[in-house]
Image 1: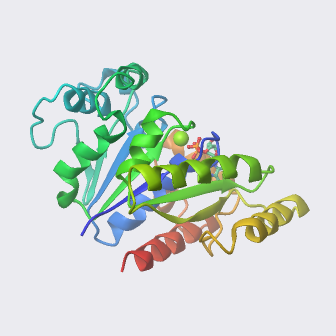
Image 2: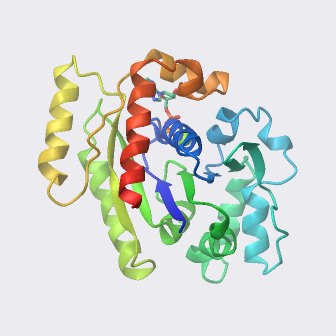
Length: 261
Ligand code: ADP
Ligand code: MG
């Protein structure tokens, strides 16, 4: 059985991409076959995986979307890069913005990515989709094909309003397009427990959402080492294996694996 997890929050800079990279690496390390999908035209995930010139890649998620929109056949590994054992990447680049525009007039435009996932999902145990910072049609496509959504929340500003909007979108997609959709959990990222502000935000989100939405027990701590990884195209396990962020991401991996059984 494969599990598709969309990593979404319409706010940028909350740790979506960092969480996608390190959760994928953690799952792959546990022997799970993982596909990472970059669904952000900014291509931060593709860059973080070491592909420094995403605009020069021959194929990307953009061509996959265009092929589905045009009802064309895709060859088996079309666009997919084999990164290392158990870990594949469907990269993105700036052309994805144009694909997003082309979706507007496509038939069943919210279900384009699902059509693709139906073709490839049996090959993986986990498919993680790194969403762009918006609630536009691409993110709706991710929600429409996912089994669950993981919501990174940066514990450094008051996120409640944005969260309400995201959760509303998730429930609308669940009602209209994907009744299987669940919330994997809210994940606090960049938590600095020494600050009163971070503690207040964690408490407030727990109070407002804790009863209705799962919240991961593990919090990802603020870590300078973690912030350096994307630039270096390394996972936190490779760059700072004994640090607190690596420990947190390996505990997150465990929690996600437990949800899956
Ligand atoms: P998003 O994908 O939501 O835009 P990113 O994962 O790209 O967010 O993270 C935003 C920025 O915060 C990046 O510069 C990243 O390196 C940094 N960052 C991510 N996680 C942490 C952390 N635990 N501690 C400190 N900085 C982090
Ligand atoms: Mg990102």
